[in-house]
Length: 223
View 1 (cartoon, one colour):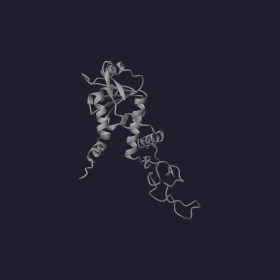
View 2: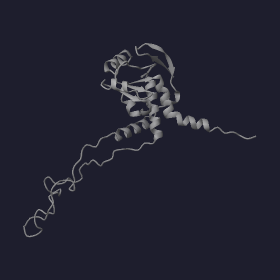
View 3: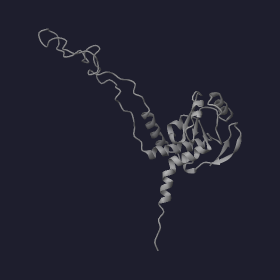
View 4: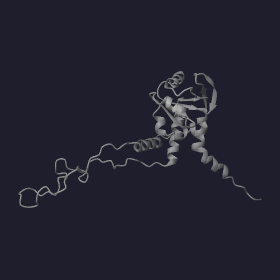
């Protein structure tokens, strides 16, 4: 699949090929949904927390004696029956929302998300991305020249602190390394802006092991 390559001034400088085994994969919506739900659940922060009778303060001694008062017997003011006592069956921070998804499924979902972006012409390739200084204005001017209308994710082949710093305050823009790509983040942004080197980084990260296995598993027959 051929895509147009742009420079930092927004001018077309040529074309490049995207690997078919990554950017031309049939989309399985059910699998993609499972992976996105799993990644969303894993990122969920447990905020609601109620204290049980073992966590509330007070209740160091019996409020009154067991017999002879004419009142109901009680052992501690921490009991859920008391005001300011513990909560029964309330939400707590020990809940786990994570859903396990195999690595193979995660990788397949990532390729499907990349293929969907490529099929809708929402991938832009840059021949280079460099800044004189790590300034938000310089990064904003570069993005403004590109044919982008909406949110965008910038994929870098490696860690470049100046790019991360310059794009950190731009709304609806996120910078990520190629090795940290996932389906949920891809589907959260409309456009995908990638460097040429990022394509190789994605291939080496997610297909490197398979290529080594396939190349080493050559059978030789003795005559």
